[in-house]
Length: 207
Image 1 (cartoon, rainbow, N blue to C red):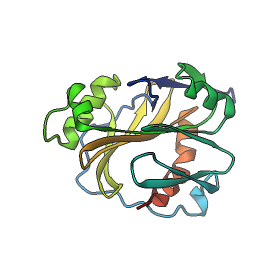
Image 2: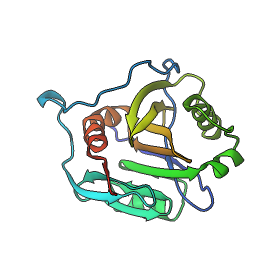
Image 3: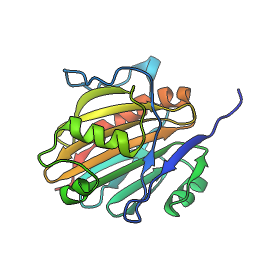
């Protein structure tokens, strides 16, 4: 099968990098029930073994990630890459076609987010609309509600035909966060989902 490269859009916000994904064509209405993450069964076993741990800078949580992957912090953002070449370009804040999986995490305080257009006392819907416009997500995206970092969040599945991913967004205290991954194809995104679920289950408070 002809290999595809994932188009990882990199947006520099105050000199920091986020991995972004595209858009998918389903409903954008958030589900009313929270998602419960379950251990993958034998038929949907994780691709990668989680052996390493990364602590999110200034966020009091850590996450496990696959063996041999690279992780760095450019406070307050974190970048985790499957391939060294992709990782080096990400750290250089380059706009490039990545060959492997990329994971990113960023969190920003409310004054910063309000400067981007988030209203005071925002809801998850407000944050979704801000991100939809800022990252130019299409009107039709798949949105699911879940809990992460101890607070409600939206999980947005994105697909623009050249990049495929999942982005989780939420509000914790006086900060908004965005945590997601990009994959080199739609099939690769689906194959990574059991690993992604295990990563989410591995999130642990550090304080």
